[in-house]
Length: 190
Image (cartoon, rainbow, N blue to C red; front, side):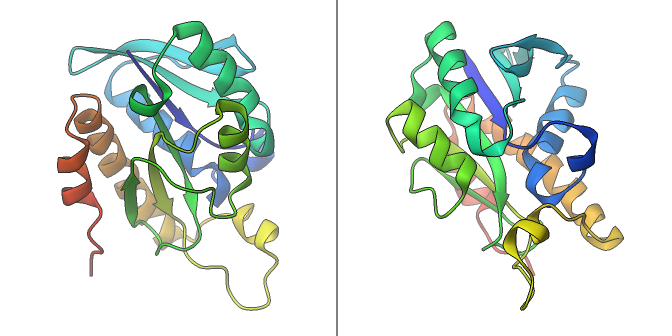
């Protein structure tokens, strides 16, 4: 079984913001695999189903980004998954170009408060992740304002395509082909 979580903030005011791209990817995965992510449990919206014959739980924490670890710790404990190998976390990254994917098996929080919370609550920085590039903060912008802002029309189109790629990457990762996914999706396009 795999826990696949996208990080974001609950409530409609954050819908479609850069910081909520993790939620957007979960929605894409759910739609492609006919999984309903509407059950309220563990301070999250969850949905259970199958991808490529593998049992998965899709998760959208409802704790706000900076407390994501509270929800994920409860979920990983309840489902008794091996965090290092059976958890996949999808989140925004301002150090990557819009639409660029970066798959990793472990790493630091890199200043991302949602990942800081996960590392603190899970007690490890070893878990699979898909970073979704949302573009670098423009000069003079406040980082919080930038990540809580919306994509331009062109950026949104790129991110929708990247969400589909992230869904393909997840399908590979849950069939123990993370290295293959890294080789395929970690390339900078252009």
